[in-house]
Length: 195
Image (cartoon, rainbow, N blue to C red; front, top):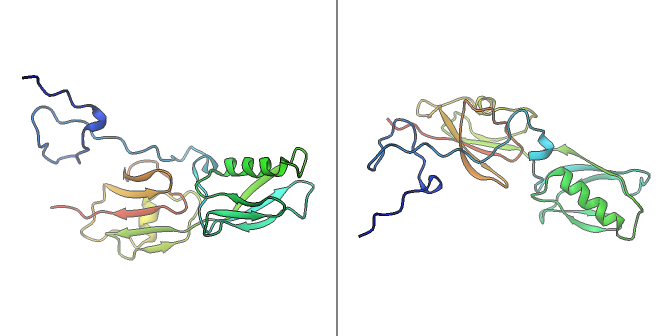
């Protein structure tokens, strides 16, 4: 009878520190969280556009094409000449390049386009916080700041980590000691502590 194949690191479950490991042998290391943006990374490279974002699109030399636009319920922006352009889930730089390509397809020669976000989506903080809910996004907001905005922890809160649901990255367990920056649209849940 063959022994079972060794467990690969990606197949092993992550266990919180201090919890008993339910198997033979040494305890496996916890799995790292998905690559979330840290304070040193530019927001533009990590932020993904979503429904409700308000953008200022400038096409140099074309005032009639420039203006303020909102990502609609279908995740698109309606622009003069080119019509609907997909925006949801795109990085700002990728969306800018997409608009420039569409304008270059028979409308303008070498269009120069800039995109600026005017109004970001709110963040959501819930779980073991005193007054959870929807809060306006502020640039540079850290995880501990987001918990403070929601009134701080309840007596049942586990203050070592939070669970974040982020568009394009799914859900991740992130230690509060990390340098992760909150992004617009983040859904942050403070878990309950187990005694």
